Length: 127
Picture 1 (cartoon, rainbow, N blue to C red):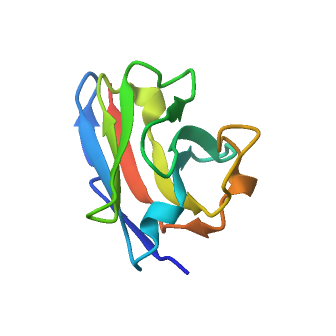
Picture 2 (picture 1 turned 30 degrees about the vertical axis):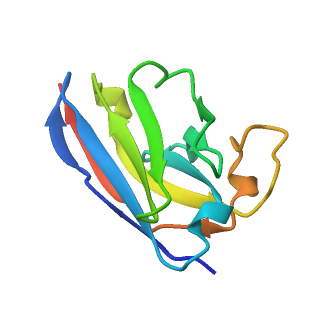
């Protein structure tokens, strides 16, 4: 079992940056692939980025590629999402999630791959 707590959200102007953190409890963090998803009002939860257990591979939604970077520090049980060049359309509640699956056909892009979710952190980008 792992519990996830996100932090780092807030209000930022368009073009600005934020770094989200997701701290995981437990000693098995390195056995989970991790992902970030987001959800804005009236929309379905959507994939943002994922990273495999070792951190050597990461995957991104086209909408955030080249602007966002996912990383992890297994020694600190933490996954990060560095968000640069933020746009108003990035406004959403951001959730981190943990997947115990050793392999994903979809590079951990589907919410169904994940068993554990954080409570979310609000990111608001003003124009």
